[in-house]
Length: 177
Length: 358
Image 1 (spheres, each protein chain N blue to C red):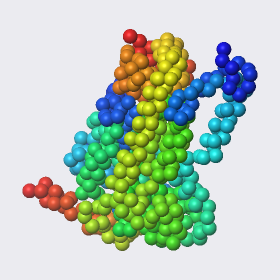
Image 2 (image 1 turned 90 degrees about the vertical axis):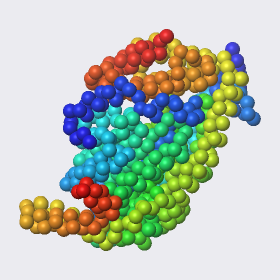
Image 3 (image 1 turned 60 degrees about the horizontal axis):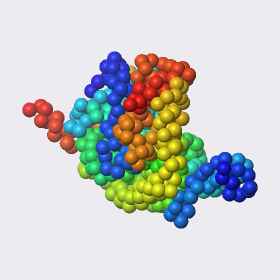
Image 4 (image 1 turned 180 degrees about the vertical axis):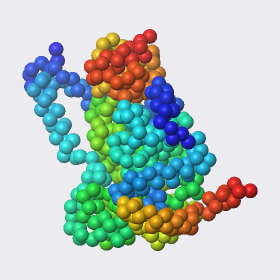
């Protein structure tokens, strides 16, 4: 039986290590093996793989005005910090001051360099208005004010028509032929 | 599109007996690379993000996307699965299959997934973002996967407008996805680097260039069966092509590192390695009860054995399939119904014996 590499006891555990490009078998007794594994575990925990979500949590604990609310979806910056999720696209505008440093910290940049929609993106003003009307629609349904709900639905349809991609109306035209 | 409850369940039991194309081990470098996955996060203009979306809004999102998908050439024959209507076992089946995330399977409210016939593409609705589209291919297929999902994204955008900002790019609920909304994950099988503890160095090297190393089922999951997912962390400030190049640059080093260590183990420790692989095969072909964890661990040794030519009775595609078919939900579906843990362990052992014995 092989002897433990660290003491004189018989080795019970055999570990393969790579040393200078060669696979080397390390033979250890029970107690030395435990020490060896603890050392390894320590090395691992001293260099934990950094994760974006962990980084986000850390950044979230920094000071910011937590009471500011998004005028569009009404989420507060504090609520965003708590759940780590924004409430609507307008939040990016509303919380810009606090969000930009956060984005730069996560991505080391705050400028999009990737693909963009082939056609020009929908008007942001209309986007925001749509979200607000949808919320008013829900309130109206809750209140059972169906008359207002109906007119809000019409309003949504009207805006959606202008937001619809040009291509869609072309294919609609084809279908009508 | 199929919105009926009934045909879904038929389709799901079929799913349990087959395996997705990404498990076929037909792609490049499949001795080390299991699969390449790319997902894009998108949100639809005019709707709040999920945290502020009532059930009513979630329902109209499902409807809006449900109109766009059949009208898009690439996705016109996709099957819709209403995840809110699925029982826990069926939802878990889709998770094991990598077609939906665990988050979608356990969340509340109207939500679902559109799945392509060959399971290569799936589009989740109302997950963390309104739309999460993903492509999953066998082996290392970065460029090809990107081209397919990029053109799908373009085609969907002809039907629905995605929230986009000139400076910040595609807007997502979580700031970590803003910009490209892309996550590229390559799933690697690295048994030799794990045996020799070299895997720690992979973690460190990846971290230096902003890549994350995770387990089989993504964030927070352990590296079961020696599977590791390497993926980008940053989504803002570089183009999709740059992100892909970044991965394409580093992956060959990891692949040749794993292969070099496999060769070294073969050269310097062959008898020990053969012993380990034969024992794994022995247990898998004769056990009467076996846990999912032990199965993953042993199958990893067998997969290594097949790649080194030390096991010839099975091929990599079969081993890949067994990794998925021995997961709890697949196993219960194959066995025909819910099973308790002990029954599951017995069914798993039986399934392994049936599939691995000569």
